[in-house]
Length: 180
Image (cartoon, rainbow, N blue to C red; front, side):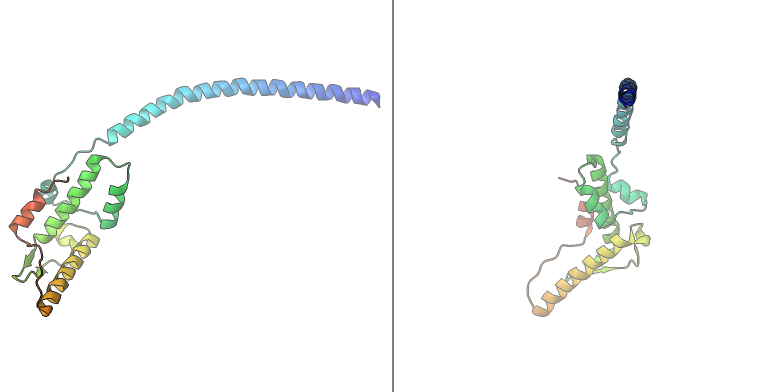
């Protein structure tokens, strides 16, 4: 029995010695792996930072450019609010989003008329007519509807009211709008 114990103790010692050598080998390989990871990881991080810096160089299009080029403005109010509230968005990207919203407003109201009472009438049938998203078009139509309800309510009640004028001065103010 003692022989078995000694043999077992020797076996345990050899096993522990094997584990220790294995651990040391892993440690050495791990350190080499870590060193390689740091060297190549830092290089990739530098590349990523450079890529981020390159993507943040966004050209800002003016409102007039958005209006004149007549490209489709796909922005919606939800997307606009979500994007503008993000802290990771660049100043240029925010400016482009805002300019798209103002350009879409200009395109829309350019096709509307206002009577002497302040009611607004629009001859457009869908956003496709002026190359803006249908959701944004419907929101603008709802705004007109709400304005007209407001005017009608005051006309029926005989009370004074005020609505903004939809004229060339207003349209020019949209074209020359600058964020503060």
